[in-house]
Image (cartoon, rainbow, N blue to C red):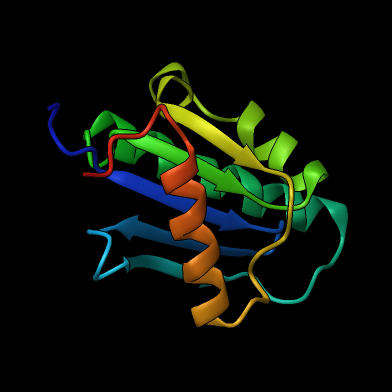
Length: 126
């Protein structure tokens, strides 16, 4: 049996960012960061926010704060965020979910994330 993986789940939509860390199957997830950049606005503001989000993930990868990365967001935002990841963060990226999950109620969101982690063979969440 391998060692337990520190999994970060990143929910982003271009102006909002939420980072959750999987704890264990019973406890669920711990919130690491929740940032709101305001309303969805001009493309330049959205792009700055996405660049900042990628910088956070790149720094965290450098510091080895997570072993596996799951990104979820609208396809266009997800694509731009993934483009800004450095090699270290990109090497930890195991799942992308092309859906905006930020507006889901926490019980629904957490159930969906638990199901996602259980169904992905590349993540050791035991």
